[in-house]
Image 1 (cartoon, one colour):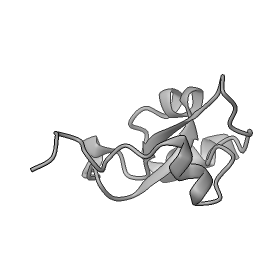
Image 2: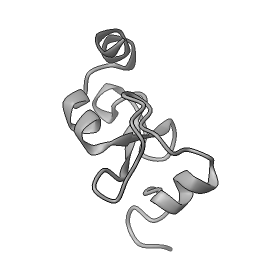
Image 3: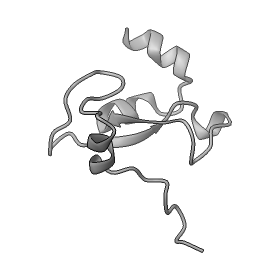
Length: 78
């Protein structure tokens, strides 16, 4: 059995391999100072899981969103 969380964290290399170079929410390009983080489309506190429904977002957007449901946050940032 692997370490706890193994397979969960996607790296910047994964983002690049998937052709993702910008934040899902604010669409700013990822940089060394603004690397991608894993963000749950459905927050775990609202029934999301650790292994499904992940998008890449920048740290500021991920922190700002917190556990706000997807639809609510999407409306707020549009």
